Length: 193
Image (spheres, rainbow, N blue to C red):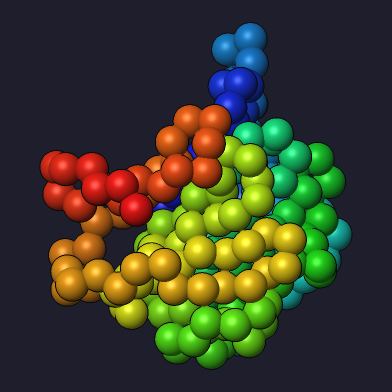
């Protein structure tokens, strides 16, 4: 569903929705090695549509991971699930999911700003960590909103409510390089926020 390439181009993270995991593709020296960074032990039956935390490898489960992004420093990554509205942060080196930063809920979708697990999303279609790794933007497709998450406090606020119907909402968000200036791409034009 989603791929994110590291800032230095040495690796990529890929969401594997069929095997319920995050894969790491090593690109350095044109080796093209694929490994499972986290997940792979969850199925609809064993996880009952829930996200399970753990330490790296198959000890952690993601249910239908569909978005992934890598921080500029390449130490942290973030993923979301297709169902519900949760966001999980994990250490790329170890695969450990952060229990400090948890946003949303794997089983409770909705439309609510708030801190951490009190926030609700519905149909997250895109995520991006800011270049300074202080904020993250979320396209909340079903709610037709662009939401902002403060990565120090896990506070979620609505940045913009879109007039575009959710069925035509594009997956185009990006941060201006080296700054925390956000761009939203709607159709073929870029609109600064």
